Length: 352
Image (cartoon, rainbow, N blue to C red; front, side, top):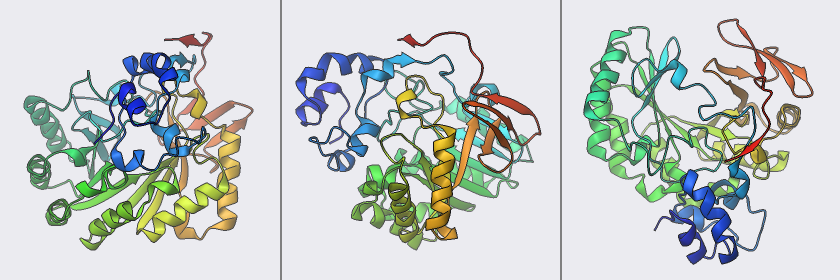
């Protein structure tokens, strides 16, 4: 059974009752959600447990830094209609829902997901989103996101895939998910068959941040998709106290490859409100990636990227498009425009 409140965390023995009040204040602002498979991986006697750190609330989440934002990668600035983010010319995000099987404490959409927010797009909004995709013939790829699209019913997911199949210029459907690690039993034969039989090329991008998440059940879920012919990619967020050392990152990337998941993105943490305690420095991230280059084969190497605030897209770190030092950088986006990172602000930090 999933855990969805501080009280349930206490009942499960994952946090002491003495922390009820402090964590309850965090829970009033940001959704709590931890699936049974991931809860089972937590060592409650380890104050630095890397799985707990990703999902158990922390009072520091109530402290917002001046550079942080409710929309740190600028989804709203690139949203021509509800549910669509059109940041790059040839692809769009289609945010079908705002519900996840787990809620990460560092999530860049933490202000938009979970109880108290709109659970999923209305029928009318979905019609407008599909009309936008159909009208823009430059769109080659549609990325299903949210929220986690694989928690939709098979009937609703089949309807989405069928509607995309009728749009001739769309060739690729990419699905971003945590389901194989969060709820591997929900990766069923029926789901694999549905994705296999879609009349577009389907990719699944799996989000996992620590090698312990790649359990036997998670690997079996990945195998079910891979055996159905679904290519799998990985997404990982570089997180202080979770995976910010080369041994853990190397084990994770090798674990992906063994599970037939190609390492894709290693994300520098976004400037989401209340997440400063997760952020490593750019210098630390670059050093970790350099260390990976010397340890792992090419098929195990992710691309280290930063999503620029304001909706300007991803920039590869360490490839000449991201320059500077000591916390002051200039990044060049895919349009050739330059941006300061982090964004300048004169305000002090604040508690929320």
